[in-house]
Length: 321
Ligand SMILES: [Zn+2]
Image (cartoon, rainbow, N blue to C red; front, side, top):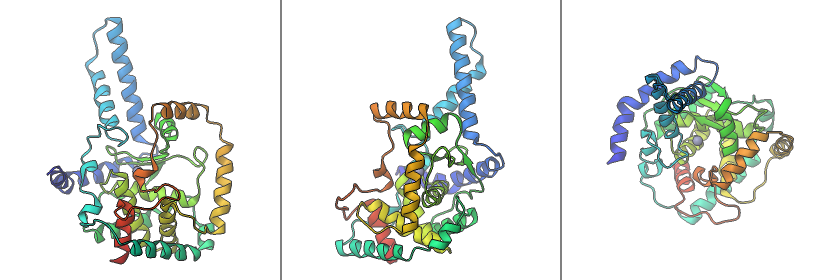
């Protein structure tokens, strides 16, 4: 019932709001969501100081409380997430899928291992740090068309994380976000979060997938995978195989260029000196507020993939259609 109300909302209002806000925020060179967050916090501080000092509370400061409330409940990290796009029908249930056969899943994983052996090394080495946004858009449009879904908004800019969201994102283990309200895509800079090109390409695509109206991580990941295989670009296609194997928790042969890059990234991460991020990370671990790989469809290392696993069952079936 809730899912169908949300679908009507998305069809008639949500997707247009996303397109409208997206168009505007992409013109601004910095993350607007962070600016709104900081403004809200200053307003809340002013409200508290007025209250404590016995002065009349300026009415406009309540806007800060309202904005903070909206932002806290729209990022998908707390249990009181209110945004409609988090309540949409899942892609797995849209496809009326239950489980796959063990042989189908094994064949699918073997195909991914074989595909990865033909990894386009030269293309990868020449590729830019972020994927071309036109191909991201084209591939997502094709993926949505295949699922008979209405597209959300085209992402024309990827912004760098800054301020409080940068600190919280790096500490939480979510170094990128799609803001549901402003509809902007924000990713940590290379110096803040050293990562492989493969990760950054997938990450940008993942955030752009959220911008198509899916706040749930699992749906964004399924959409990302589908867009990777639908793209008219061999590098995107090859990354789809890597994405699947990376989540599967099994041993597989990584192309040498990726192996070398991952080792370099590991070293760059060790060389980081982020005192506040580390401190916040420890606080987050103590109160169990850390990002979980499982909600993105990752399976624990060396464990058996359940045949009804949301990510693996869906992508296995989609690969056969
Ligand atoms: Zn996400």
